[in-house]
Length: 308
Image (cartoon, rainbow, N blue to C red; front, side):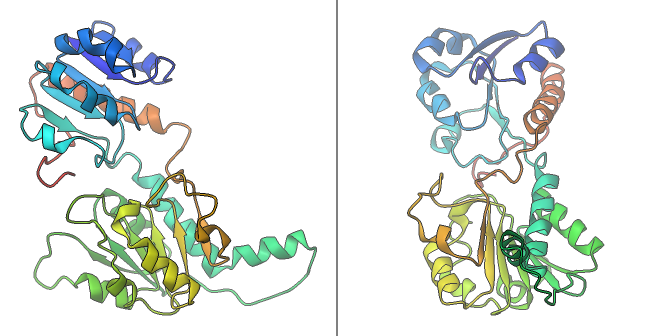
């Protein structure tokens, strides 16, 4: 089997790949021109996070490829206009980063409930200033997008005694609407992937439905939120605050006004960057590789129309 790996040669998980699949012929790199000959012979493609553009550049040379896997969970950067014309199966690493993101969402809730920014400020100033804090127990967490990440948030919130409301794309009879979930929630957690149907899902109108005491948390994708509308709500204190791991433009520009707000917690898209994240993703790929070579069904198949 010939596997084209779109990744820097020094990408650490390659050592695991070589060790666990020694009989697979690997071609590794990120320069399209140097990979063209190998691309024409490849049976499958493995893409490291942030290198989907190389796949696009090599597309015409990948005529024999039957399977494309990305080590990332998000697939919004893949060329779906091209992929839909191909018979190649697309898989991703969704779900593998969910636990870390669930923990971040809870940490963000605690940041506001315990006013940890105030603690740090007082500690820096050596000021002894007792104040009241809040409990998460009894509060409502509204989860927008109840997939792997949403479930990870929900389990942790429920364990803390929180009421959990959820909304998902395919509503069942009796499920609340997204507006109902937002209106009732003390913490609104955005967990959806970025697809054509989720672009600006958290619109200006939906942000306006939030409680004045509510906190918005985004561990999904920046494009799912009307960032300008969110900024306006934060500036005007129409909502309590926000904890954001993802943004419309990344890195977030230094001049962006979000940096200046004391009711915003900013994470540089690292809420799921645990030390073993890429190794776990490679381990999942190796399991799928065994399925592929045995002619079995693959896990985490991406819908080329829905784009997740």
